[in-house]
Amino acid sequence: MRKILFYLTFLISLGLYAQETEQSQEVENVDLLEEKVKRFSAGVKVGVPNIIGLSFEGVTPLLDNRLAAFADFSGFNVSDQETEIGINYSEFGVNVYFGNKGKGFYAGLGAGNLSTDLTFFEDLDGGGRGKGTVGLDIKSTNLKLGIKTGGTIYFRFEVGYGVTSDIPTEITVRLEEIGGSQTQTDEFEVPTIPGVGSNGILVGNFGFGLSF
Image 1 (cartoon, rainbow, N blue to C red):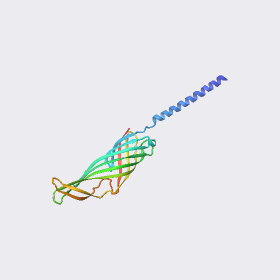
Image 2 (cartoon, rainbow, N blue to C red):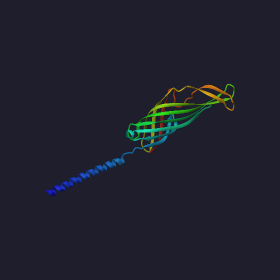
Image 3 (cartoon, rainbow, N blue to C red):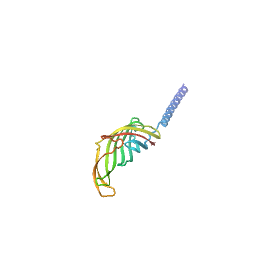
Image 4 (cartoon, rainbow, N blue to C red):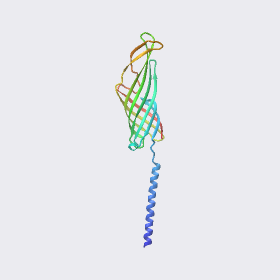
């Protein structure tokens, strides 16, 4: 009788051990198959108001890997016979992902700064050609919705709107004669800047790059 109980106990213990080992192996296999969070992304954004520039994002462990910090930078020039526009755009903010892997749908909040150097050319009243440059900085609070794919190569798409203070429609410029000493002050209309309206900034861009 004792031998029978011994063998039964041994077999039950062996079965339980085998079951526990199998479950542990399954958990390890799931952990190995589970996709890791890619913490850092670097790439390019094309659209408005940035036109084309660099984009960086870092996914933090906060909110179960849902909170990411980002920074965007761009610079470009636009010109015609009467006006030259030099624009530098920067934006810093956070993206909050609806999923917990730093990818998929997200909402973004950012502080944007559109710094412009406006150069105007005009014939002066006393003859000669005048040139004048003035700076105009447009700060905005940007609200965005977007989607970002996973993987080492990512793609993203964003749309939103930037709230700004009133943007002037006219600007006073001091002109200096090119190759001469004559000066003149005139009023000019602020030229059209892509994505910039009288009360805000449209945000719409497409991006791609690498995630690590």
